[in-house]
Image (tube, rainbow, N blue to C red; front, side, top):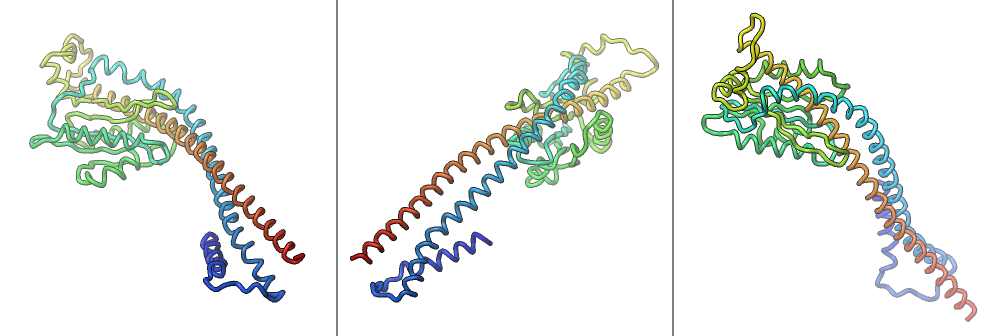
Length: 325
């Protein structure tokens, strides 16, 4: 509203200045006084606009710097937990393998994203990979569904794949996550979704400025048995002896559930680290851009103010010369 008022004031003041009627050199003292105030107000309207703009940019820069510091603090808290969680799923990869190229009929794509924005393109990357996997695993005799963790992925996938979204969970990172919470979440997914292969899409943390889009595959017990019978890496399962009264199918069922919860726990932490690192980089870039914009505005403001002062001096000198003459 203030900017609109300034624009209206500028148009109101500028109207007499661009009037086509000639100015009478012989004016009364009151008319001369009113006329002399018009150029002054008109010139300084733009100075007020620049001041307001500079103030806004300076406030935005303070906010982005504060957000960068908050992201750095959260990153330090999550990074250690994410590195420690990598030891949970690595034994399962050594035992059951990670076979993303396996051909199955029922695919479930678990897309992990953030609930908040201002963190670069990590959410768009996860959604793009998820859509690519959906196209790759779709067909006349195949079924592919989405399970979404995070508000940002949900907002993007609901536009063109609303009917394929089986389950959507948001506000996952509202409280600090632990393994128990993720295990309960993984159990809910396994109970509500029929699958032959779970394909988990997330961003693996590498450094503050780098993250790696990653896909982990968890197979159902039936598919694991089929692949073990077919040979390959999963064929080594038959070399292990099963102790206790459980059958091979029961052991594989338990292993699959535990593997999925471990992979999910690591994926959520890795994605949270990538989110905070990307937010740090984005806020740092925003702060530097705000600084550059502030420098340009300051330069333009100083030039405009100096031009206005110079014009005023010229008018004073010209008026004094005219009175002496």
